[in-house]
Image 1 (tube, helix red, strand yellow):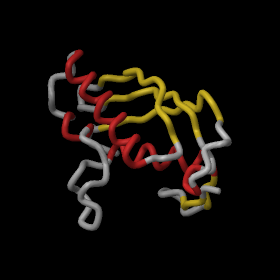
Image 2: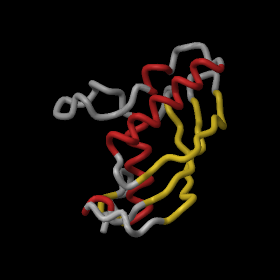
Image 3: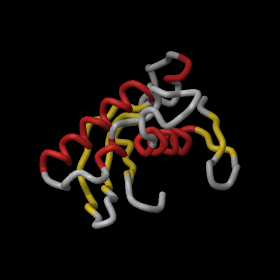
Image 4: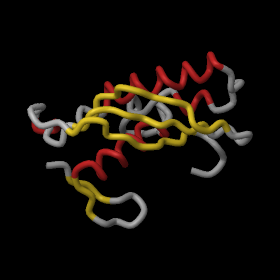
Length: 126
């Protein structure tokens, strides 16, 4: 069973709620920004100041997909869509995939399909 702490309130998070927080953290953390985890995160924050055109959006898709594949064993991304392009550099995405609640124990026999969430990357205030 997944268990963690809510980054804002300190309350206990379990299951899908903990996985959602993990996905957001992975997507918003720039690779190289953590002193004790230099390889953790995604390349998506590095794209914040790039022109928000089709090529950059595709680069965001790839950065998020690669990071989730590497760092979140409990979520298998199936679909990603750009939902928000802000003048402040924020880019919002809708993710859909399969959640494996017991993946951290190596058990992929239980799956919750079509688990979706919204992730916002970049911007001035996160």
